[in-house]
Length: 207
Image (cartoon, rainbow, N blue to C red):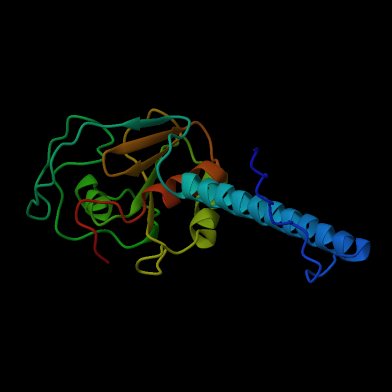
């Protein structure tokens, strides 16, 4: 005698609510709306991340055309007025005096021992050399200083601009501690990027 197959319970539940075609369309629209909202949010996040990276890349590490790294020559402090020898000219590190030069544009050459103190304190120095009078270049440099943004640490424009007493590799040389940027002519964009890249990065940062 064969056994009767065990009856399987029906999957149909007459008490379950029926989903109308209208409700199905509404749910489908909600799913699509959620998908597009997530997609748009993801794109916004990616764009903001890219902008943040771009700003960081401009303001901080990143090579600039003409930039060179100069071997460090120490940071010894000498009595004011004492002669200090350097291996590289213009020096971007090495012995210096205790007092920095005032911020801004100097019409007379600032001694190396003083401007190096500015560099050690985290400032940026721009040197220029003109074989003959160059009032146009000096006016550009003065305007650059007056329009430069303050640093984020001390809220001060930590820039020193000075003529140099000997020929330079280029008309204008931007200096940070152990770093040099040779500029054949005035270039506000590169000079600003250099400033933003290196300001407040000296070995003895202070006001």
